[in-house]
Image 1 (cartoon, rainbow, N blue to C red):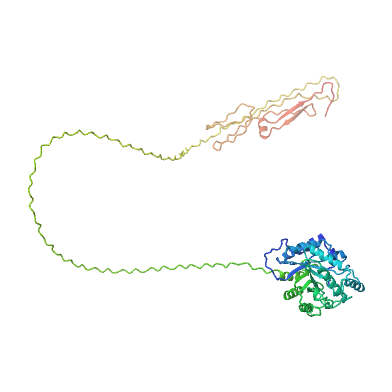
Image 2: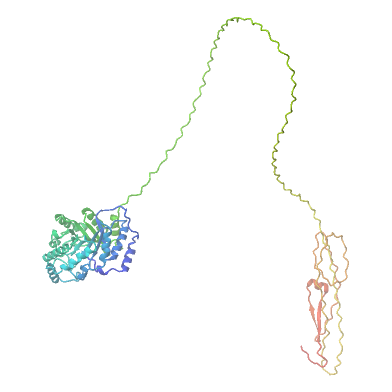
Length: 574
């Protein structure tokens, strides 16, 4: 049967982190008020040390809040110190167990050191006989005392698990009889420790393996639970084969019932056949049917379903089977309002009551008898004579003063007068046409340039070519800028343009109004042109260009320069 190889050397921070990330488990702690699924105590082997304790709430959350009641770990079997429980991680498991009263702490305990050291059968037989003689009792006494001190005296001890196989040094096949004696010595020694309440679980592999497990059974007095480790592997091709095979699941149930013992499944899971959701479903149904004391799936690859991503279908089957059923949400019954059908008001027909005239019965008039009233005679009494009355002087009437009633003036509330905006009527202003007075430009007559006559050079030097002398410089006439002409607002009368004396002011042309005809200026008289200087002389003239329209007025002008290098100079620069 498979075993978790190197269980005690596989823990590290990286493994813990990878396991948590691979599962996708939520980080919330399970809610205590969620409904429970099966009442069978369930757990999983997640790691032997503190990481195994830390992962339990995440597994619970992944299963929808299922209560994980079983914590399962292993003592190291390489040295006797580990078998004696001198490992720190037992304290973490003890704290977890004590947190809830209904929890179970399951501890696998090796029976020999070098338990995975591939010790040969003859050496195993020697070790079994030494144990049967009591040579190793002290190690198990120390373990019992350690568990009681930690506050977990009710630990379920899976002693010498899978003893019918070929893997562990504590196997039974090399000497079955002494093996059973050795088991009894261990149990007796541990039960002798005060305060203990241990339960000892006899858990072979499913199937015959190296030896039929019933041949290793030590007796009902030293066994409390009959367990079985069952993985998805041979012998047996199907789950039905695993049930009916010799030393299979059915024989375990029958054997335990015959001996009055509960059953358990400390280890189960996938192994040889990969992702097999059918096996997971059938195993969980078997567990639900036969109600073991507890079961714990081995949850690491390749066996697992939570920490192993390579079995997604089996993982889904496991989760669907163990997630507690939650009551569905209470859907309120929709209140359908009763339609109010208005009762039609049928008017009651008014039938007129016929007026029956009441017959007038005349009342007979009975005459009243006239009874005469007797008249008694009135006696005449003499009137006494009264004395004459004294005249009464009337008292003058004092007039009553009239008190005027004050008139209370009523306050007059002034009515606010809303001023009406007076919009002045626009007075139409007739625009008077303003025709600008045309100004006739006067031509400017330039001053004529009088050429200076050349004076013959008195130099007696007979020079084959006489040195030309420059002509005197002629000043350039300064033409002032034309002044702007402001048109007069008065409507002009037609004026015949008359010639105006030449002025140095040249006005800018003014566009006449379309009403007034444009006067044509009198063409200027032609101006005298300057006499060009002789070629290769000392007198140079440069023509001036004033623009097209100004050139028409002033004519062509030029600036002349005459150079004189002196009498004795024969220098000709050009």
